[in-house]
Length: 122
Image 1 (cartoon, helix red, strand yellow):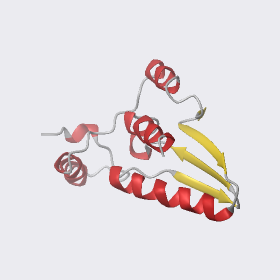
Image 2 (cartoon, rainbow, N blue to C red):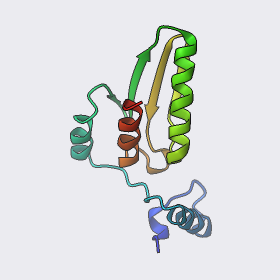
Image 3 (tube, helix red, strand yellow):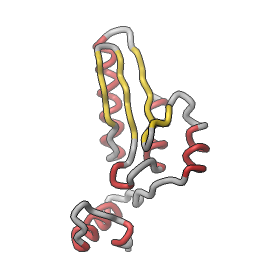
């Protein structure tokens, strides 16, 4: 069983926190734990095109056409949905910027780096 103390909600209700944790465990997802700085530096070395910005990692792509940029966003959307982990997306004509962080952990987790690697492989 997942410990309710490891999951925090904005309103602090124990029951809601416990249900949230059990829901994560049921879907086969790991509890999101914020990574220590040393781990973040090590994992960043594996994704050299991404940049650390505060509690997030970001990368920008530039495409030849707007439809190419949107097609990329659609591929990212399906990938992110499959992982149940969704980036913040900025699209300006042929430019796409993705930002990854795990909001409920208050910073970067392994999930962010796993998704970044999968996006890089698109």
